[in-house]
Length: 69
Image (cartoon, rainbow, N blue to C red; front, side):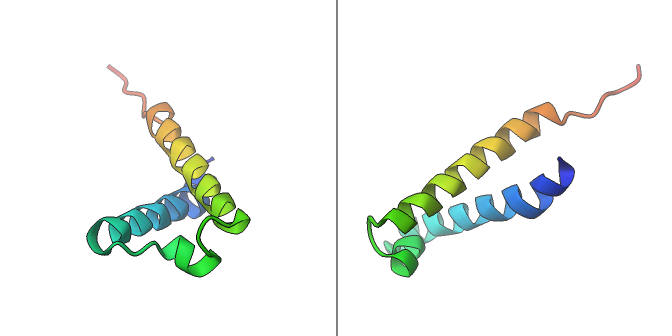
């Protein structure tokens, strides 16, 4: 699962955060600019990024190192 997190979930979450940063700061939606506003492709990209962020958040809570005390 570490490879999935490192190579898939983290980059997708970064892309989503970058897009929302651009929307917040400049009013520029990068995904809509690339795929078109409210198209099926942009909806798929938004959904994939949202699911990746949720999985990554869940993985952060599950992957807690155990301590030997």
